[in-house]
Image (cartoon, rainbow, N blue to C red; front, side, top):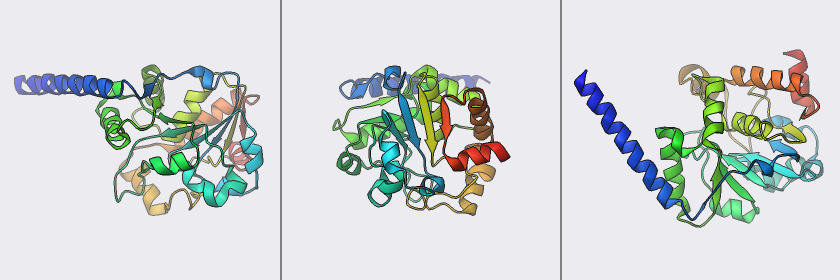
Length: 254
């Protein structure tokens, strides 16, 4: 009992110290989140599912006030801009960068600069836990003060996690729920099917075994919980949330 308590105290002190260090090291590059980035705006969120390739709507997507991409979303622009558009105003990113892991989303600063990404937005908040703090510190190490970036608020991060607990929210879900709670005028969803259709291969080379590992073995995420939550959100706010044809059909038949 005593050993356990001492260990908890030690861990808490270490977390506090590392958090203060992260706060200091990011003082010149971390921008406060601003809900006005999305409030009252027409926002397009482009995900990593193959549904974005069903119609050449790149120009339509680029016509929104704000174009949001997720994790490796910038990777597809070069070869698929006719379908996905080419603007990226805000990139929601997990900062999860583990070599050899297909679920990893590398931090590609040069590529983001090449495609004029407006703002990198950490889809977590480093104040909310060790995983978030380690991911944040990893990005700081790679970024070395080159690019200013932001993170969702502590309140938003806790809300997203609580909504799906004990599963962890995906970056796509985080983007949808965070932006919706900023009161956009419109939120268009494309390339998002909650894993009910295959990945866009240019985005991520995921097969059935990979999905089984993530959702059934490691149980990091719950695609079904995310789907049911967003489906209900759509049913209650269909004047705001506009899914692409594929996702709309899924909502209506599943």
